[in-house]
Length: 98
Image (tube, rainbow, N blue to C red; front, top):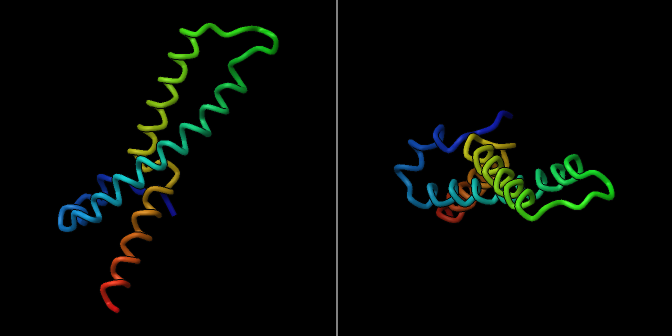
């Protein structure tokens, strides 16, 4: 299963405001998750053992990782946001059928 972007799901989201909220929440969750993963990877590969890092470098590096994670999530990321939105939609449909 390939990544699903918010733009691809926009027609369904326009007809259902709850689905649109689920898509946004899924993308935001994925951005936070990616930021944590990418931040750990970035720290592991950019710091030399025993050398202190300056505060300004750390701040810019953190901003870069946040932006990268947000843009990856907006473009579909690794697919977790789309899976969460689909699961939310299935639950709401199942709840409506009861």
